[in-house]
Image 1: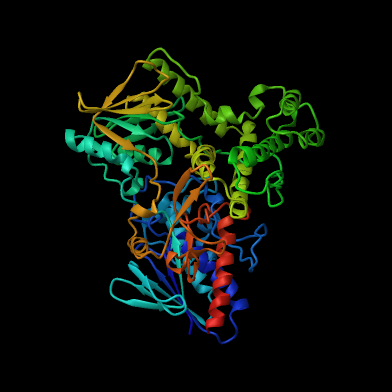
Image 2: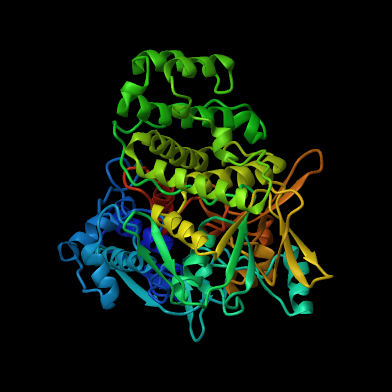
Length: 628
């Protein structure tokens, strides 16, 4: 009887199991039995990130209707499409979706009962959905496939490439014909770049918190009333603020005239926050498209013609990508708000089609067709909204940042600006197309480091992965309460030995600086294989059985991505096999070179992770069938 061991039972492992259940009736011959073992120390389904045991203040940055674990009519998987409910649809009537089991946590159960499609659920509610999704996948396995779940940690894998693999758990060993590492977000030892800050804090009795998953960070060292410098204004920052304010007993109350007022508990530190852009991520839109969905991809898809050889992101990819974003934006503007345009859509599109995004002809076309400059898409201004900002004093900087937040909140809650959502749809499409294109058209090392993993991922997250709008309301209330101050763009933090403090400044306010007794790097840690905290990966690396992706250019520029090398079929490269992929070991997920986005997705987006799960499930089943 063939055996498959999947290490990781979070969303990625759950999605793979769902695809195994969908494909097994076709690819396993009648009577062929298969044992599948899921191994994870965290709760199956939700895994570490979506576990119940975390603060109810931590929320998703997606609406309930925009989260699914299931393929649908837009999916281009080779295997069977097995539709299933989104989080919102499941929460509306969980008993209608077998196998039904009441949610044990009463607070989570209450949340699910009142969850609206446009609400932003807690991460614990998503954990309940993922728990059900895993149980549904298990229930749909054919009778010849048995599932075993181990709440345990995998420490080591041994075995020859042409024989059984031994997966060593805490007190047992699983024999497997195939092993899959279904990897989620992993921890690493602190980056060497943080060594100076760590040593400074230890030397002066100060507090430094390196990048970490906020739910797991130790915030006790951030004392009430203490001035805390915060680097980063993304989702980790939003989570940090929630835990240091409401999480310490403060309350937000709605004011009769609108907006929020914060009632402090007295246990909050005082936060001084900045980043490269100097502004928080854009709030998520609170509306739907007013016109039909843009037909994507249009200018950046599977048929995009690219030059031979290693590519430069800015030169070879970005112009077509920018044009795609423009297409999504203007498609919604012309269809949803035709009164703010001067041309019929067909006429505009015919003129737009042959033009380069950065051509003066394209700019002239948009200027003629879209009279109000505020209705035109300016990607550079979106990327760096505070570029060139200079103010005279801290009060003026706060006024400018508060006005920016209010304008962003108003724009993301007003359907009049739904063209922004058209651009959002285009950005999602671009991410999916990059997953298809990059394995066949790799970038140079320099471009991968600076443009793909640097600028592009940052811009994509800034525009698409922001917090719910109410979070910006809360930031403004905290600013009014004197507990949050914005430091501006291009934040610089100096380790001030004379004063024994962290000193922060921004070129937006020349000559001004702020001293803090603590420094928090509020952004998610980037996994680095050579510093991984995962015991299984650490052992495989020590034994020379996995490799990190290293890129090199002819000019000598090299880049270590920190990602685990896999081939196009997600097999692990094995240095002990002369660099060839291991025939019995597979890896999926964020820390691998498959570069797939999140393991769950928006409905009807043909999610890359679903396509990858399906392809890997079909390959594994075909191989296991031969082993039978």
